[in-house]
Image 1: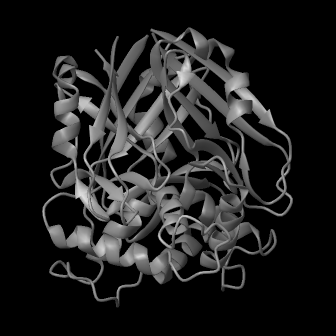
Image 2: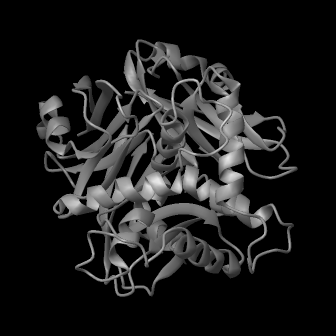
Length: 139
Length: 139
Length: 139
């Protein structure tokens, strides 16, 4: 069994949902050596998150932003409010969506479904660059 | 360390939450050889999801459907609406619940708690068959 | 590749969100031998969950409790209500937050971001002790 791990720095994105599948694949070219395995992507932040969803129509990603901003409101009596009105909602959205994705590898490639891509979910207005850890293992 | 991987096709289910633990276990009988390990189940779709919850009382699964349909409404000004009113809510529910579950293996069996089972969460009215990838590794 | 697994019993906590990172690290000291790897923590219950979020300001954890209790109400026409009004909401919150976390290991330590910690999310009023399984693997 082989195991590869790489830190991946993503440049700052605006608030919203962004496809980053290709950046992840490029970060760990050794994935191509694995006939069977798994790849985990982990985000080292608490106000941004990772999820897997539709990779084709950009309106899906816009609807994600609209829906989550309505469901996790900024005008709510949060106690933790010193970092601005977008901060506590960002923590809550990050928990709902999750800090990592785990994807099977088959024949050297991510075995995603036809319509699946990895989203970076940026929940802050000015979140800055984001640090990921990509780990793949298998045979 | 051993690693096993298998594609598992699930037949079409009606919209709602369905226990599929037994189908997963049957898909990968080699799991029985692992004294210690992990098993991941991944769904290759963006409008159905996987989660772990109560395995005994079917009303729990009915309440899941009622709650998530209220929380992620169909009558909402989504931009992505060409595939029907159940489509965009399905994407959002899938992101909230997740595209995979990861379960420890002990003595050749899934080390689930007494009341835990794996749910296929079918968020479309007519989602069709669903493709999973089951991967187990360990010693 | 090495693989270590340990059951970890957590003492009863009051309903709410609790930092348990240190207890997890102490449960599996062999993690220190892994230069590169992953650590999974799994909860064997359906009315408590695990997530990763802010580790510094306790008001974040209070806001989590307030927000999730508002979003998943107790006064809702659930069919599954025989175990008390906090039971079905606990199942739903557990599904939204997830039954496990998966964290990279680098140089013998959890590669969490500066502000990340592992939360035990106790959704019941009297949930009792909680059983976790901690698994780490790597080189």
